[in-house]
Image 1 (spheres, rainbow, N blue to C red):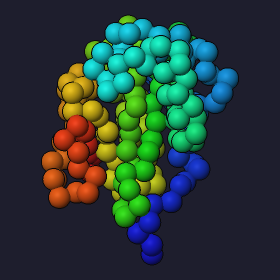
Image 2 (cartoon, rainbow, N blue to C red):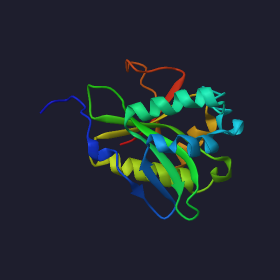
Image 3 (tube, helix red, strand yellow):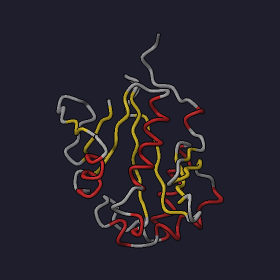
Image 4 (spheres, rainbow, N blue to C red):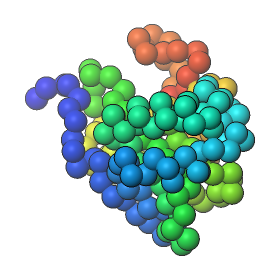
Length: 173
């Protein structure tokens, strides 16, 4: 059996629970997702703090679209677009996948929505991959605390070739 991570197209699927619905990101979501992303307050702790600007957002959207593992998030009660998230392969030496680049509209902070998104993505990823990690900028204290609330454990292995003091990997093993 190979130790190489391979893309599993079943990973990029519609996921839904009582709080959120995640749908594979497609071009037709560009405008509605920009409405959600256009609040500067969302990005104040992210490494790219001006992502609310249309040209910077477009680069973020294009990158998400190109990765073919990104999702748009809707509130299941209202149907409103409330953010996005995506997967990325951690490396090609193990069976690890990352969840990151998540954002939510401010009205959905501090409640059940981040937990609902992450739980869907974690459960889905564990169907195909051994390790699931959250990729969070080290300065994004709000996201780190939210990840810890749902059981993530911070990785601190400085011998890992991907270790970067600017980034926290929080793991669900």
